Every structure is written in C-alpha cells, then in structure tokens.
Amino acid sequence: MTDATAAPPIAKSPPNWRRRCLWALPVILPLALFVQAREPVSTWAGANELFVERTPFDRPATLAGAEWRVVSLQRVAERPDGSAVALLRIEAKVLDAQAVAQPPCRIALLAPDGRRWQPAFLTPNEARRVLSRDKDEGKSCGPAFLGKPPVGATVAITESFILPAAAFATADVTLSLPASRPRYLRFARTN
Amino acid sequence: MATMAFAALRRSLASKLAIGIGGLLALGLTTAQTLREAMPPASLPVARAEQPIEAGRWQLVIRNAGLDKAPRPDGSRGRPGMKALSVDLDLMNRSSESSNAFSRILSFAPPIAGLSPSPTAYLLRDGAILGALQPGLPERIRMVWDLPEAAAIPETIRVVVTGETFKPRDNLLAAPGWFNPKPIAAVTLPLRSESSGS
Amino acid sequence: MIRILTRVVALAIAALLLFALQQTTPGYSEITGPITQQGVAGTRINARSFTLRVEKVVLAERLRWQAFGRSYDRDTGGLWAVALVEAEGTPSTATLGGAVWQAASGLRFEASQRAEQAGGFLRGKRLEPGLPQRGLLIFEIGRDAARGAALLVSESRWPRLDTQLRIALPDDRIEQAETLDLDTLK
Image (tube, rainbow over all chains, first blue to last red; front, side, top):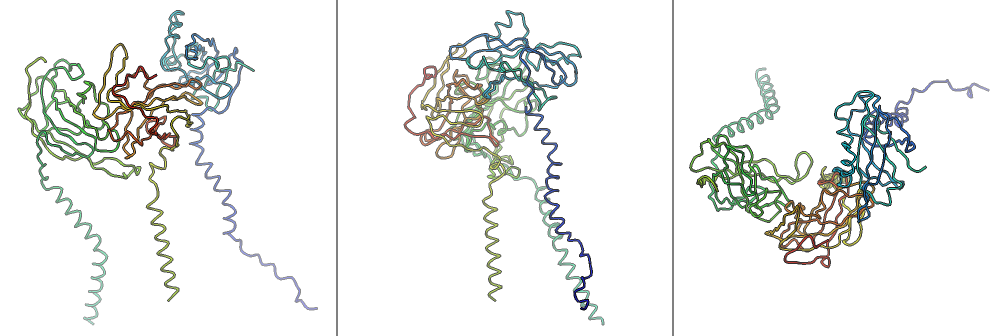
C-alpha cells in the first residue's frame, strides 16, 4: 500500500471568469433594460389610463387634488339617425391648486363593452339651447381651469357627447388628469 | 557611411511623403473648392414669358405680371394703404404626390423694397385661395405680394424661378423628398399697371 | 491551394450576402411608416381605430352642391372622383385625416381641398362608435388615373406605425356622370 491512492492535493483552480460573466448576463441585461426604460415607461403610463377607481355615480370622489362630483348626465335630444346628445355636468372642489391646474383633463363616456365617446369639440345645437335656457355658461374642462382657481373654489364643467341612443343608459363617466394618470376615476352607473 | 546615411534619409523622406499625401490631397481639394465658390457665379439662364420652365417639383409658364389695387380673385381687398403685385402663371405638379409647396418658387432679383416675404396664391378657376395642386394637372394661378402704396416699382421686373432637386432617400429618414433649392432661370416681365379701381 | 481558394470563395459569398442585405434594407421611414391593410370595396374593413366600407365611386366632370346658403360649382382639368363611404370609429371616437387616391401608375392624389365645404365631406369629421356615418371622399384626379386605382385611408394624414387601409376599386363599382350634384348622392 503506497500513497498512490492518496488524495490529490487540493489545488483550487482559478475562478472561471468567463463562465461567471456569462451566468451574470441574464441578470445584468434585464437590469439595464429596466433602468433605461424607467423614464419612457413612466411617460407612457402618464399618458394612458390604466388603473381604474370605481365609484358610485352619485357620490363624490377625490382625484388629482380635487373632489369630483357628477351633477347630472342628461339626454337632451334624440336625433332621427338614432344618436342621442348627452350633456354632462361635473363639479370639482379644488383641494390642491397646483395639481389640478395642469391641463387637460380627459373626460369620456365608457360603455361596458369598451366603446368610448369623447366630448364633442363644438357644443351641438341641442345642448346649447339647454345651456342658454338654464343660464349656464357651459365651460368645458380646459377653459374652466384657465383662471387657476384657488383652494376651496368649486369649478363647474360641462361637456356634451354624441352617442347611440341605446348606449346612453349604460354609459359610465370616466375622468383623468395628467397629475393622476395612470389612475382614473370611473363613475359607474350600473353595479 | 555617407551613402548609407543618404539612403536612410531618402527612405525616411519617402515614408513621410507617403504618410502625408492624404493630408496634402485633402488640403488641395478644399482649396480648389474654396476658389471655385469664390468665383463669380455663372449667370442664370434667361427664359421668356409663355415659355415652359422646369423647376424641380413644378413646371411653370409665366403669363404676365401686374400691379394694381383691384380686388383679389376671391373678392377680398388688401389692407388699406397697400397695393398688390401679382404674377399670373400656369403651374403643374411634376412630382408623384399632391403638394402645396409653391410659396417660394418665385422671387425677385433685384429685390423689391417693401414686398411681403411670401405671396398668397389664388386658383383663378375657383377664385379662391389655392390649397394643393394634384400631380399632372396644370392650373392657372395668381401669386399676389403685398407692398406699401408708396413703394417704388420699376417698369419691368425680373422674376427668378427657384427649383429643388429630387432625392429618393434623404439623409435623415431615408424618405424621398425635394431638397436644395437653387435658382433655375430668370424671366423679365413688363409690369402691367392698371389705373386705380377695378 | 484548394484551401486558399475555398477561403476566398467563402469570403466573396459572405461579402455578396452582406451587400444584398444592405441594399434591400427598407429605409427608416418605411419601417416606421404606415402599416398597410388590404381590403375590397363593398366589405367593411377594420382598421385599428375605425372601420370603413366603400360603397361606390362616381367619376364626374363637374361637381355641384349647396352649402351655407350658397351654391358651389366646380370644374376641373382632370376628373372628379367622388367615393361614397360609410365609416365608424371603433372603439373610440376617431377622425379620418388621410384620404389618398393611388392611381395604378403610382401617382397619389390627396383628397381635394376645393370640395371641403361640401356637406358630406368626411375627412376631418368625427366618427363616433356605434354611429356609422355615410360620407364622401372627393378627389381630383388625372383622366388616366381613373381605372385600377386604390383608396388609401388612415386616421392621420401621414400615418406612422398606424393602419392605412388600401381598398382596391374594381371597375364594377365605378360610375360615370357628366355633372354630379353632391346633395343627391346620399
């Protein structure tokens, strides 16, 4: 019995840096992508409405420094081609003047199947008649916030929509501001 | 010993020359280019009215020029205290897309003092402001410049036609476009002046 | 000797391949340009933000219509091509910003601004979801651009990474007229 079967000397082989670096790649590359993408992703998220906050239709809700309340959503006219003209009145009580004053707010009517109607650019004649009858100024969101209302002031916003008459009954009101996106408010009519 | 040194000197000179030849060539080329640009420019070819001129995207036939205070083709009048210098021409779009880039094809050399920087173009067929011209369809249009009533105008004016060249792929977006405007021809026109009123 | 030769040949083939790849790369504006979607006249075609159906095309020498209490009469050196279409914004409100008549020869005629006051002119009008709108797209084209053409319709005037519908116009959907009164076309 010799020492021929003695254990070989434990010589530590030098670390294989090439292999270590290769194993580190799947960690480093996603990390670099994540660091690079943070800014464009946050810009994209700030432009889209991703996270919903549902509230009942008749209760106020807070978003982006103001307390919003739907005053009325009424169907002012039905046109012979099956479309309806809807008039939406919203009130906002300012809690944080800075956050609210950033234009523009995005108000839309959202149907349960995902269709969205944006407010009409020019107030339709039927809505204009109702507004003048009620002695309402009828300011839409941008002009209403132009004067930079102070904290505690109440701002009245009016928007009109043209949508199919059949869709009016189930349309919810969505609202978002640049300060709050990607979160947005959805005043749900049906539960 | 001396011949070896001389041979070494010759070799080093040759290698220095070989290294420096690129720089010398570049210097020579830029000098030649500067000299060529400093030379007086070649004179513009002279064209006549009623003669078709190809200016890049457009083909034009200049008809006449006039100076008057009459109402514009769409019925509007200029601002008070201003008169209008108008040039009538037939314009055809030679490119393959509709285009409305015709505000800079005509200019005046020598320049006329007080002239508004860009003209308004009217489509004489409709009597309205010209929108865009479709490819291959010639139209008679009138370009109108404003100038103050008191400004002096010579009897004949020299209109310079500017044209661009087509690049199938530009340097920024690899998209086709018309670039590098340069004068193509000059036309001398008598100025048809009308007495005040229509 | 053979080994050197094979190496040279392999290099030459690789160079040729790379050259072919470089020459056939589409330019930046093509890569980020419109995404063409083919369609047939008469069927409803879905783009990303709107749907469109081309009903018919009328070629005319003169157009006539009434708007804002005035009557308009327009003639042309070429031909008027009036496309009667039905469009709807889906799933959200949309407008048609780009309408081009692409002739068989490749010439592109944009929708004419001379006829913008016509009541049914559809470019720029809001299309609400659930409310399909019938309207007109009016082009001024050369006489030889009438047959074998296609309509290119998109939401923005120069679509970038957005759908552009390419609707071929067959001859059986094209009508001729001497003078077309736009108010009777609806």
